[in-house]
Amino acid sequence: MQNDSLPTQLYNVAQIRALEKQAANSAGLGNGELMERAGFAAFYALKEIWPAARHVVVAAGPGNNGGDGYVLARLAHEEGFAVRVLTLIDPKELKGDALRAYTLAADAGVLISEWDAENLSMADVIVDALLGTGVKRKVDDNYAEVIAAINAAKIPVLAIDIPSGLCADTGHVFGIAVHADITVTFIGMKCGLSTGSAADYVGEISFSDLGIPENLYEKIQPAAYRVDAQQIVQTLTPRPRTTYKGDYGHVLVIGGDYGYAGAACMAATAALRTGAGLVSVATRPEHVTALVAQHPEIMAHGVQQAEELTALIARATVIILGPGLGRTEWSKQLWLKAIATHLPMVVDADGLYWMAEDPHVSREWVLTPHLGEASRLLKTQVERIQLDRFAAALDIQHQYGGVAVLKGSGTVIQAEDSAPFVCTAGNPGMATGGMGDILSGVIGGLAAQKFPLALAAQMGVYIHAVAGDLAGREGERGLIATDLLPYIRQLVNPLH
Image (tube, helix red, strand yellow):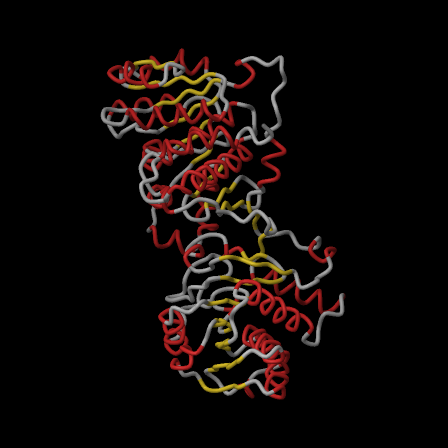
């Protein structure tokens, strides 16, 4: 579940370096002061999370991340912890603040020795201070062996700033990365802690700004933002008592080819539960009876030919195009008819299949691909998309317009001329059929209520993900898409 106590601003490594430089130049935080504060913050977190721990092993690398580890080791030693620092290099080769931190630790009596995996067994907690945020290529063999040994030790791990081997900008794993139980990160939340493979490595995240003055942050535009739960709560205000259904839009779901009626039904139901005033479904005639029996609130229409959509589109406020649409000639003709309109639209599932086959551009839609669909849209491999999900979402938005929602762990929402937003809520139980249909319905339902598309996408992704987390409290395995519906209704009424 997303930790809403963390800052919403996300920064890349270059921006963090700029903040550090400004702090040293204008705020008097040079000469190792930031390193001292980082080491203290990490040590404080260690004591908070593992109050019974008394034996600490620090794996220290060759740069400032290693320097942070030496500060932590010295502080722990001074408080009576049994501490050993393991290093792969001669510490005297360190430079600047890191060399100073090593010297102070050695002078204080901290036990420092060459790397030996056997020493890990004595630890209550292992501190990962190996590589930090500077990694830009595959971890070399020596450090890969160290990381593998840390992971194999099955001992709690605290990662300083970022788990070693994880890209701080994208969340990509450079061959191998430390599996941390807690990551204590500093100065700014790194983009790579929120998406890509990060969720499998970072554990719980603790943040400290190290006392950097707030005015320095105002000079740097964040690279991305986490979806702001508080903004969503403030946006979903109670409705006026004199309202009526026409105030909240009419969603038209187009989909439900043979064998896929459930997808259209789930999208329609989610739109209703999100608060759309009216919801219609255009589907195969054979599915109408079942849809009405399932939810009589849905206005189900059997459609044989694309021209039969004309009257339905004329009454609609928003179209959801694609849930269960299929890949038949019937499907293609309905798709062509729908995208010829100028209505706001959410395009998902087979709607995205046809989009990849016949690319169009619009400012009035939200595209919601998962990795496979994104790979077709961009005509590239899934693995390349996972290398940099921010770049992939931006490419989709540039090529197709509107708002791109790249689904997955750390869903990225990219609107035109805007920094991306990331949602870190959600869980593995949501990797099951129908979840995307529910998301499309939520976003479409919000768009029908006149929320701008970019905001509807952010809100919809967050509400959907948190509903999944709430439903998942009873167990992630076996979670199904419709389990989210009661929680969606709760989440769109936060002040009730």
